[in-house]
Length: 394
Image 1: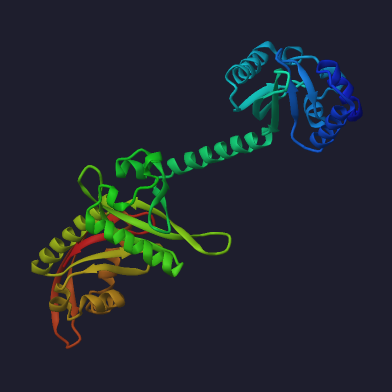
Image 2: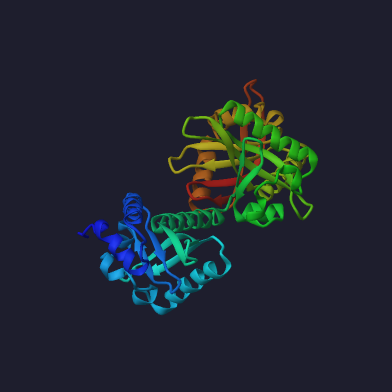
């Protein structure tokens, strides 16, 4: 615990700067009482950069008694490199007579680095002697918090940049506040440069920007997220892409909507695949509708149940059954086989399924109106992970 030497400071001050009368002694004592009540360290140096007057906070800050500090300089307590910096800053204040505010770092007795914010100015007394008056604010904790925030921000940005989806967030006026690297690439901007821009500043078409802002407005006014919005977007390369977009309102601690967070995923390849599949199915439907007989896909499941994922319209003419009726009740195909052919029909399917050999069968069926038809059927098996299927024609 440090001793309070406030009462001894007038004598210490007098030894370096003699006072003229007892009234001045009283003024100095009163001044010392004031500065010792201030939590920030305060010091006064003479023209030789020696400490002349110190408050209690300064002594505590350096971890030394006042007697150890008075009349000494920075070189007596700090590494030379640090003391050189302090001396240079002090000399600048002395020679130019300016007020200097600066952030500095120094090493304390325990070897720890502390950060300070200093304010220094020159005071000249009636005799023309110059003194440097300085105040210090310890900002080490602030600097540590600042470093932690930078690290946290860096880790967050790193996470955002490695998520496959593109991500961005805006304020209440749909002005961009930040984005991920993927979004910046789509918008052809540097991530830090997105701040302050709006959709009209980016390479989207005007109608796309209008649509984005309308969706933003709707989400922020309702306070409810909108998920899986399928939309088109023109990127920086001038090509149009499909995206699956999510928009989520951002709330402050009082629950007020203050912005919007949006993510989207490029689904262009998926949409192209879906379109190609749709066109392929349309062609298949057209071909199967004009093919003679009945085309169908038959599946035999591990539990020996049957299903028909696909049946073309030829089933109506051949069996007197619509594709929907056969898919709803596959047993109708078995039941319609002529009684004399039934055992041979079932056995032929069983043998073909076990050997995975192409199935061929010729026999009779009896339609609901009693009409008898001779049919010839053929199929090729295809194995799946859980069942066997066959592409067939009758």
